[in-house]
Length: 396
Image (cartoon, rainbow, N blue to C red):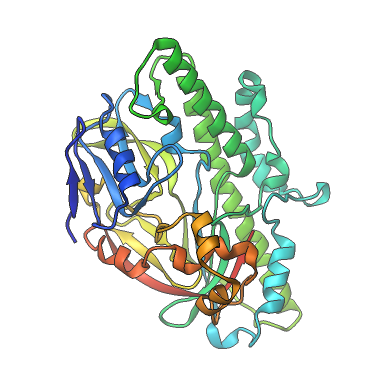
């Protein structure tokens, strides 16, 4: 479907791929479009909704500056998916034991690995890059070693899914954990201080930015790049842990032997990258959006009671070669908790082995937009390669 709505109140237009956009998100998008360094236009994906700092589902090209709050605090958050040689018929009738085993292997919520369980291989890949950052910004030190290979909470999840042919996939969603949050918060605060020091008037204080050549710009670029690498490695390490659980199940005779196939995807949806669009080299911030150049494979998850999709990018220039990162929330966590009950959660996740307690009511499928409507609104941006339905979900 084409662009559904264009906002023209700012210095550049905002092009939105849905009619389903709340007033508070419209206000945020308009505020971003007023900034003097935004290039050409702002794009808003079909899952667009209000977010802390900047709109979730927004794609913002900037020249000569980056807005740390637009990148956000879950730097490098994204998805990893891998198809196995297993089929639906080879899974046990009850997946409760398997969910418990995955929960035991992968720390969730605020938890991390103990000293004897640290993910040495993953840590060795990223450790050197953090040292020069910590030397200049010692406040950034956090539990990054123990949280390598851990899920976190909120909307982060691990799932076993079946595709349209009944083949088994592992799919997971997580980011840069506590260290990414620390980096994001630190540089958001530094950007706000710089705006105050320079007496810069902004439509929203959360849009404080760091210009190229300013005191903290290069440090932020280095730190945000490292956090994105950490997030990518974190997902890779979790995938290895999950595969280890499944291999142990096979060793014990509860699953047949299997192989991981070459259908694997690991992609960010909260990040900034150097790209070229509409004749200029820009810093492209995707906050709740994935890259969808021609041929790029991506993952668009629905809620834990809905379908998810493996997609291939179509390289649409007006979306800055981007697409949605999921269904997108249609209500806040607080509203979801007030509106729904545990019985609602059980009904909406029927057939999925997952937590069904009050602690995850804020993640109930009804709190999210209709993933099928979201997909229909981005048929110009991606094509569907596989349709997945989850049968097991682990949440923090």
